[in-house]
View 1 (cartoon, one colour):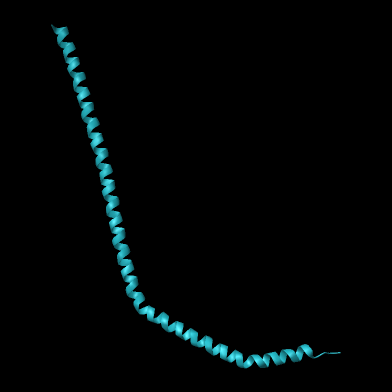
View 2: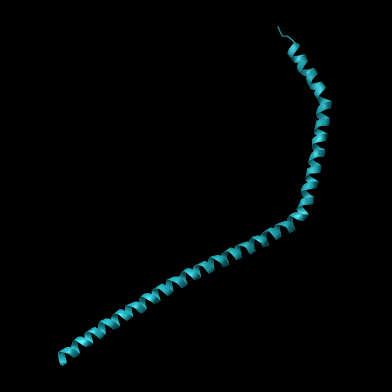
Length: 110
């Protein structure tokens, strides 16, 4: 009976090894699934955080540009006034410049 007992023991070991492999395989699959789930959760949290920070940034920009918007308007008005002054002064001087140019162009040196 000893030889039959030995073969039964080997068979039990093989069955136990197969069960252990099955358990390890299931554990690996569960770990892989959990890692994927954790990655997806982290990506969602990162997107939410990025969105929140973007909103905060836009809010801070809108607060600071509110006061600078009046500065931009004031600078545009000053620029327009300077352009008008330059056009006015060039229109006064342009006739004199044209006369001087005509004088030099028509004056012939021999």
